[in-house]
Length: 73
View (cartoon, rainbow, N blue to C red):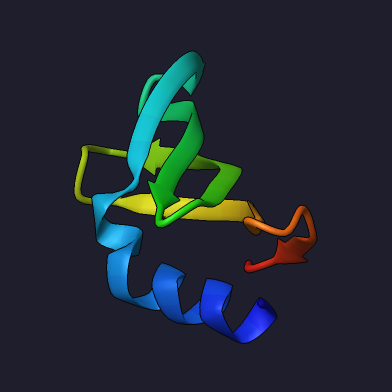
């Protein structure tokens, strides 16, 4: 499951939703990162820095269809 989770993240991470929940400063937003693909649920936190094209991931975990949790980033 771990290899499949990492493969899916590599292929589809650009489709993840970045949901801002607070300002860090004038140029940064703290965000929750969410993506679901084929029963694999990716969740994490990151920052949008200076605009929507500049994203920095702090961590991402995946809950696999069998219930195991894998650290992706």
